[in-house]
Structure formats: structure tokens, C-alpha cells
Image 1: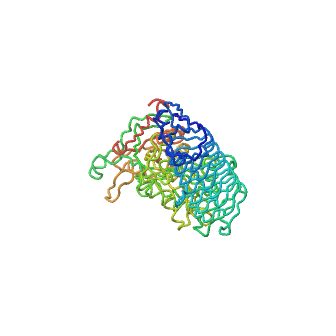
Image 2 (image 1 turned 90 degrees about the horizontal axis):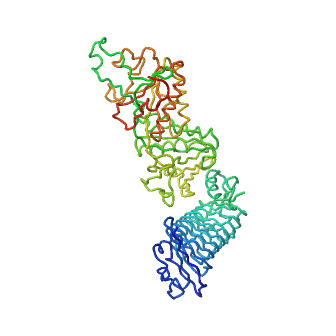
Image 3 (image 1 turned 30 degrees about the vertical axis):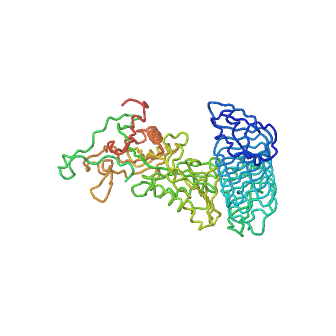
Length: 273
Length: 364
């Protein structure tokens, strides 16, 4: 595997925009060339070498991997519009990590800031710790949120998780904030912990699975009487592959509520019993 | 007409043109190999290319899965008048189904992708959707990459070749794609692991159907002709052969019980008919038909037709069938094993009986 390592020299004074620093963009560039690539730091445009020590480890076989070493919570748009390859952040990441990505993998070993995976269309984004508000949602002013791929948050998530999400799978092992799945268009969400207030506010379609505490269901949802055992088995078997609180799901029974009747009303809140 | 119409169209002068005493009474037997007292003709079965798909029908229990599978594969003996040939391939346990319920895998064959798509939609729509508790899934892999990021496959997309099946792979056709409209707007889709499923509300809950199923090139029309001393023996031998074939994957024997009595030849004295009875193998026409394959000790002939996903699958089924027959042998009333062909003019797949048997058994 061709691996480029960017080791943080020191935390920047302002926020740094790392859009364009992707495995594909660095492919074939030598160390000196990579160091001269420019990124924005506040209103300034600076060379990448101002922030990172660059090293590369080329191999004949395998894909492209970009590794960020250090605490990058002031570095935004890591993996922005990623189409392939692998990005690993050894520490935490800033805002917009994995936003608009359509392929490849991004793995954040720490936490991530706001708007992670927003308008994500493909690939896999894994965050080992917590993620901020508006993850898997839409960019400000946009009509559609996450629209494909898989988002895995092994810690907690903030408010408005999966707002306007349209397609794909978003999983949180821990708790989530308020307005989970608000205005959800479709897709699958699974929550391992507790959810805040206003679950599924204005959701049209899609499925939200609660493995931990039973959700507080708004009066605009109705109890489902019909059997959905087949769909549940298909979904549960897929979620169980992520382990953690989702292990053993196929053997557990469910209770469903359908809504939000104030919108299309074809969404479902699935409480695992 | 059965699928593999043996090439028994008389080549001599038309019946009635020559005096009865000048007509040939029986074709000379081809160089046969004698195994356990049974003559195995030095001939071949001729098969032809088809399109096929495998679908997996599951239900709350095996009884209801069987009801659906039997119904979906009913009236599917020959492409000539049924539109497709279909059969139950095998029972599938809960550990091998996507939803953890028991079911049956079904193979459906047709002459074109378009006709197969029509047949699958009709049969699943009328026989599976309607059957209590059932769900239906693709039995051949549909690649998520080819099915699009949302699991919605582009028309004509090529599916990946499944492991172990060199010839497999092909287009995808609708499974639940159009049946979803039965939901009258209440249907919802669920994309799970890159595969799209449709959930259609019905009176016992919901009918779940995978959106598409993979279509593959296949081989239709492998066959064996079993010539026996009487009806009891012929049935016993044919049943044993079908049982042996059913133990193999990737094949179905589409006729009732896997056996067909109405072997056919191409053409008819009636212009409207594309096929007619295989006079050469009708014991009742011995001494009457211009050419006959019947010998005086043969009073009943039955045929087994085999459709398979690959040439190797059909060949393996024919071999398994022949071995089962030969095990019964002459003592059980079997006199000859033959096969139907068109002289090699119809299909690219020729299954020579002697080659299939290899060096098994004794001399000729």
C-alpha cells in the first residue's frame, strides 16, 4: 500500500481547511511536492509543510492511504469529496470530516466535530469516539442530507443526527442528542444508547432502530400492528455485523411505531425489546 | 412437445407410399455398450442455450414455502407452451436463507431474457406474493456495485460471476421491482448492505421481495430415454434416476415428477403443430411407424429432461441418472438407455452417453 504520513508539527492558531488533500491528489507526488501543496489557514494560504512533516512509504501493491498523525480538531474537511482510497486520522478531526464523500474509507480514531458525513453519498466513515451536531445531515441550505454509504460512530452523537438523511446507514453505539432523524427522508439509523427529545420530528420514511433505552415516541406516531419479521431479520443481521450493542439483534423481538403522521408517515421507529 | 425433441423425423419415403412389407420395422441399434445387462446407446443428448435465474422462496414454515414454490413452478414443463421451464431445486434450511426462515430454491429457465423476466414477474406475483408469510430473494448474487449505490441496477447491467460457476453472470431482471406497485403507494424500500428490498403491505403483515434477481446463461434440454419392459419397471427406474439427479445442485427436471412420457419430434403432418409424438419411441407404433427404436421386449419408454445452469451441471445430472438406472439394470426391467438429439444441428451442447459414463462398467 502507498502510504503518505502527515505528522502534525503544532496545533494551528486558526482553522485549517484540508479539502483537496486526499489520497488521489497525493498519488505520484514526491515528498517535496506534497510539502508545497497549499491549504487555507484562516484568511491565509500556506504550504502544507507549515503544519505537517511529510513522509511517504511506497509499495508496489495495494491502494492509497493517507495518515494524519496528531490532534487535528482544528483541521476541517478531512476526506471532503473523497472518492477512493483510505484516510486515517490518528487523533481527532475537525468539522465536515467525510462530508460529500462518495467512496473510500475514512477512519477517525478520536472524535469529530460538526457536520461529519454531511451529504455523504458512499464509502465508509468510522469515528471511534464522539461526533458533534448535524452528523449525516445536509450542508447548510441544502435539501438532502446523507445519501449513501455507512457512518459508524462508536461514541456519542450530537443534535440533529441524520437530519434530512435520504439513504445509507448511520450507526451510533452510544447516545444521541435531540432531534434525531428529524425530517428524515429515508435510510437506516441504529442507536445503541439513549436518544434525546423530538425523535423523528417530521420524518417521512426510513427506519430508526433503538437497541438501548426505549425511545420517547411523539403522538404523531402510531403503533404498528402488522408483522415485519422478514424485514427485521434482514436489517438485524446486517446491523449485528457491527458488534457492540448490536450483536445478537436477530434473536431479539421488536416493537414498531410508524410516522411521522405530520409528514409522509411511512417511517418506522423500531424499539428492540 | 418436450424440450428435447429427438431427431426421429422419418427420412425415407412417406408412410403409405411404400408397401407395408417394404417399410423398415426398426432402426438398427447403434453400437451399444452393455452395462449390467442394459444397452447404452452410442448416441448423445442435444441441449441448447437458455436463460435462467434462481429465486429463493422462504416462509414461516416449510409447508407454506412449498405451497408457494409448487405453485410458482406449476405449468412450467416446456417453453413451447408454458413460456418457461421451472422446478424446485432443493430445500433450503434457515441457516442458508437471508431471513433465517426455511424455504426452497427454484430455478426458472426460458429462451430469452425478456420472456424470463415476464415469467418471473407473473409467477412471483401470482404464486408467491399471494401465498401467506412468504418472501422472495435472488438466488444468484447481485453485485451491489452493479446494482448501483442505491441498489437500483441499471438495465442490462452485468452481474458478477458467482464463485464456482464459470459460465454464470448476466443481466438482472425485476423480482420485486414491479410487484411493489401492488402496495398502492404504501410500499417502502429498504437498502440493506447495498441490496434493495421492497416491503409491500399485505393482510398478514408485509411481503418482502428483493428488487432484482440475476439472470444467467444456462443449458436446457439434457435428456435420457429409458426403454423398459413394462410400465412398473419404467416408472421405478425413472423415479430412481430423478431421485439421483435431484441430489445435485443447479439442475431441475421440469416435467411432472421429473419424467415425461410424451417425447416428441420436430414437426407434424399438421402444419399448425411445431411438434408431434415421437413415433420412433412409441411401443404402440412398433410395426406401424416407418422407423422405430422399439424392440419387441420394450413396452414402455419414459424420458427425463434436465435443465441446468451450466453444461457441467447437466452432464453431471445425466451421469447420476444413468448410474441409478444401471444399478437397477436388466434385472429391474431396463433394456436400453438412449437420448434424444437433432443430429447435432440444434444446440451447441452435446452430451455423449458413453463419454459421460467414461470407463465405467464392462465391455460393449
